[in-house]
Length: 168
Length: 321
Image (cartoon, rainbow over all chains, first blue to last red; front, side, top):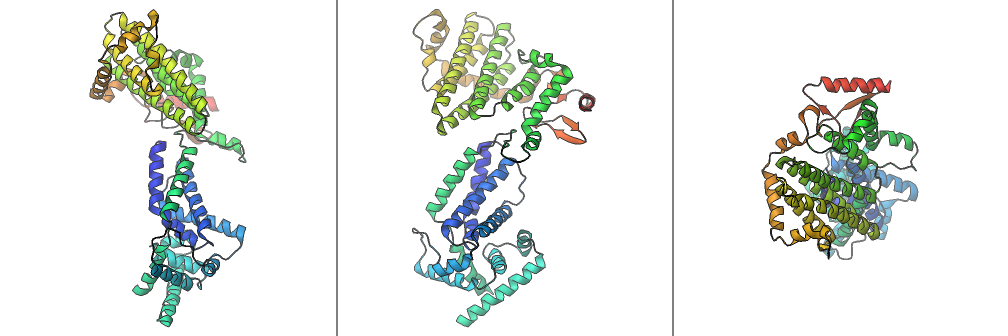
């Protein structure tokens, strides 16, 4: 495959997953700018893998794995609790975001609920129900067993349900 | 449960804005161009620890090894003799699949690669001249050489354009100027062949029209065909006056498309010593298979049986002991 073909394939992957990776990052770090930088770095690393001729079986999973590693590195450097900052300061919606005020309020509500979950449960829950990963895929990403991930997701889900019932 | 998952799915609203997405797309697109894919060549950094190890595992290194082994096995005479080979001769595969990939592999920069591609395009044109002079320019040879010429021209211009994009417009202009000058020389030689009135006229004329068309697209104007005077310019200016020039180029294309690719390969590369790009010669180095790249630099003496390949492997093993 020559450069142009490979680049075309790469940009198609970007078009498909840029939002997903950005979301994954922004829920783990403290703001849009950092999340944007991390997302860009993820795709640059992905290009390097393509360029090296690495055989990529599951591009999506690789992107998440790269994002996860970059976030871990970022935490090591920053040593700050991301989502707390995110919820305290408020999620920064893009200036030209088309969402309604109601949508923004609903989103803040979800963020407020999941901030009480521990980091691993929050990640498992969002990957399962927002991104549609299977417990097995999440397990591969986090290095846990699929059973442990399932248990974690169920417990986290129960907490969210309890919160919703309390507030109904 | 459904309500809960619906509730969580609101997080889908967290996304990049259109502007952010587009801006990032541009950045990574630029990044991809700056870190281009070089086919069978891989970069390694001298800053990296164990860079020597990286060098030895580099695919470019295998090209060097391949070339060295050919030289060691058959002597430098073969590769040297191959330099002047034309399609249909025994050493032509060595020229195409050994000598030229080494030239490309040894050009580390964009500029170097642009110059090598220019040189290879000129070599294809030169082969047409030689064949036409000897009266051996068959349709198959013409088709093969036209295609190979076009490939190298495209490569050279693409590399030159990249140089200009990266800010080195001087080098880009130099590469293009050198290429058009070289092509002018070949066009002049072809014009002379054409004027001899031999049987190879048609093929030479068609190829000349291809050279003119490509040169015009490189320089933007047909400058080198519009010489003011001298007899040397005559064949070229005469050709310029031929209104059938572009028609001739399209006739060449139509003609080459009709020819069977396998037939062309058989004619260009003689049966007794056929080199194919799809197969590789595996060299065992201290128990580890060192596989030469599958592309142009792959050398395989594809003969009647695999015995010859085994024999070659045995020779290489002997050399490496």
